Length: 128
Image (cartoon, rainbow, N blue to C red; front, side, top):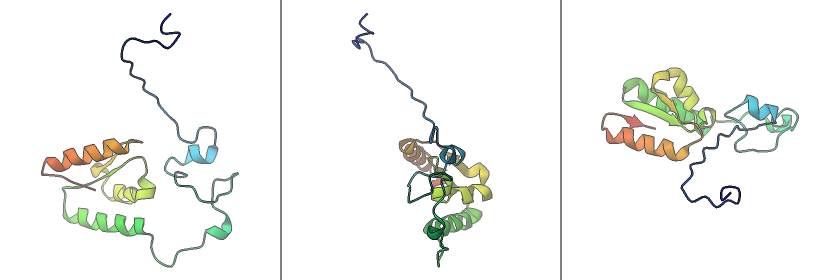
């Protein structure tokens, strides 16, 4: 009876599994998109055609990813960690070049930081 009234007298662990974009097909089909949302066509999930202008210089994400791949090509101790955002962070580019040195911890940024700290503490691995 006390449980029905919300009067639990012991610690309870609640594990909630979420699914990004549930019910919105463009979000369900693109697990690393639609996190930081700008104007978009609701029917397709894509930005309006006027907003798809090609940038004059490479995006910072691409510059970071390309440089990280170059450094990792020279140093086997470099690994990349992402929290379910390989496309938005450039880690997807790194993953194509070094799949066994890429870690996706899911939607768990705090775990990504702790994981990186643990790897770095070993003295043998350089997490990015």
